Amino acid sequence: MTLVPRRLVKGDTIGIVSPASPFPAWFPRRFARSVSNLESKGYKVKLGPHVRDKLGHKAGNKEDRLSDLHEMYRDKSVRLLMTTLGGYNSNELLDDLDYDLVRRNPKGLIGYSDITALHLAIHSKTGLTSFYGPHLMSQLVNSPTFFRILWSVLRSWSVKPVQQVGLSLPRSGLKRGWNTIKKMIGLDQ
Image 1 (tube, rainbow, N blue to C red):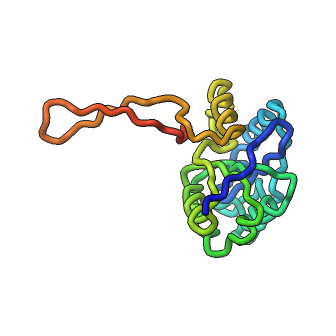
Image 2: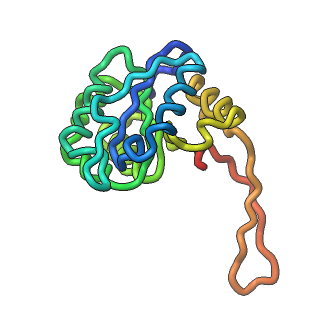
């Protein structure tokens, strides 16, 4: 069974979590600018209590990172979870993530890189659709054009392609490659 989270609308609350590396601790001004950017677009922001934590190369200890994820899934006002950045360590959370809580409170999750482990585990255990796309602190989130495309997808949950991309893939031993047109929805930087 596939679960699809409710569409995002302006005024909704976006929960910010750091399940991987401690980028908000390393780059506090960039973090603050990124939060302000979301708020300036008409969204409310709720920060996980441990979003700025740092424990070596981790965004705090495993229990606190899990607690932030669980709190965001429990909070009825939060409509989308957005990660600060990827890096390392999300895989530590997979065995202890409360998948029943996630299933009962289906919300979008957006992030990429190390967050892919969370996307795959959540979908595998719950059937919940999530979004492989930019983190809060990604440069592209602060690009007006990219921001417009990203939020149009999140507000419509569209699976139609944002644009078509022509790919040229070389084949070993041939003088020329072959072309194909594929449709992509992945939002990466």
